[in-house]
Image 1 (cartoon, rainbow, N blue to C red):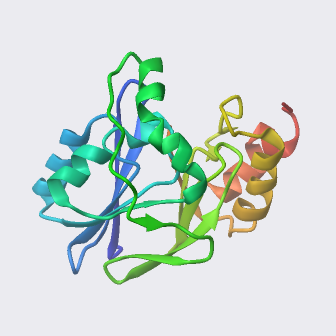
Image 2: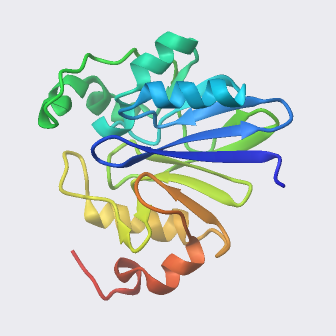
Length: 214
């Protein structure tokens, strides 16, 4: 059994995937994209007796950050966000209104994510990759045979590009340069839907094979 454990927690009205990632030995964990149901995430941490060390955000769309304030309040851990998504992050109340929710501006980020810089959970380092297209400051966390890709690449699909700051051309360039350069065995933990692999998407994703175009 791997010493690195990943727990997927689908949640909210948009079925967003929040992830807990932990070092089994040190019992230290990070949370990636705490969405609409923070009580669920915090309960899971408590049940597993993991100590949360950080909040990592792949991007700042409303369904991925609704729980940031509650998790920060409960744990005090630092929030990691790429600066190019700060405008979207601070507009959480406006985007929340789209979903019929009254939301407050989340706490300011503590750490500015940079492409090429490592982030760590326990004894495990992940590389931060800039993966724009779905949002300007979208990033992915890559390492140990897995990638947490947010809403860049899905099983059989790709992220939306009809949102402010999005670009289909940029998204596809990102997928080809930052995702398809990874080994085929790399597991993709996406922001929505089931896990997949780079190899499966390379062969079957219609946006990559060219059978579907924007």
